[in-house]
Image (cartoon, rainbow, N blue to C red; front, side, top):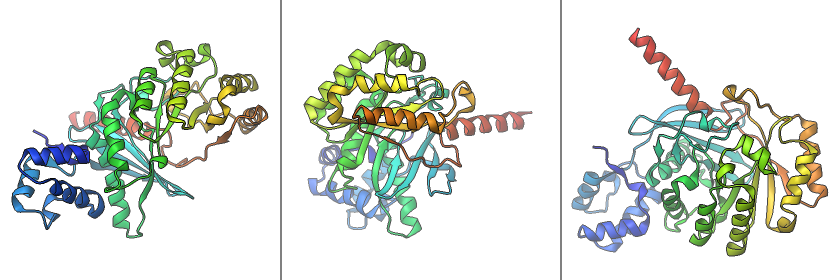
Length: 361
């Protein structure tokens, strides 16, 4: 039977577990420091922890549940990792280089059931949720990669925008956030972490009530119900009226600014008309949000969608600006590799399946 990743425990959970097994609270702080400050890869490397505690940890947990399956590196320094889980499933994690630091995009589920019609992540339906440990371990594997490079670089920012819907794996995602912002661990600043959701309304309310001070992004992609339902089936369950109410609650509860993600699809949602509707939708809360305009990465299986041309992008941007909406056009990363989220995983699964069939033949 596979052991659970020790990275799945928050400091409070680790302390409680060790107390239950006869060890003092300070032992948890030692283990925590070895994991996140020393970044050991084996329990035996925790040299000043008693042998009985080491054996206890070894018998119940593992430090490594992910294995690198494929790595792609783009000319701009972006690295896309395809990790294999203990059960053989594949997930993607992406390291991106910015002027302000190193950002990692993590995956929260194996596959996705949200079913956005333009997205590569949903090409393979959800198999299961990732454990909190499997999410944390993505960050740790990237950090280990940086450590081995010997340049003294550290992960400074996190975006929870990889494969899957984070709010559909709510409890594990929340534990992941608590582990990341813990000041005795990696100590990633809460303002340097962004969680994205396609709009599971009840979880937006619940997330606001957690008071975890990270950033929230809403994947909107359309300014009216008719268009949003066509491209995002989640809008049938949570139409814009309900989504806007939850956004209002989040802003009032947390006093934090929200990011609205908007992928521009050629001749679908990129007209001036949609820009005017989008500006009107958020006119009364324009000081508490900004809109991130995202160039579309075409996916072979979704050939009905193409990237908006530059003229349409700039016209959309200018229309929002004229309506006093804060917005920007997102900088692209990794365009010379499988840039779309989920694309590498989908291609690799097909490749592995074809190779398996060839062997059988």
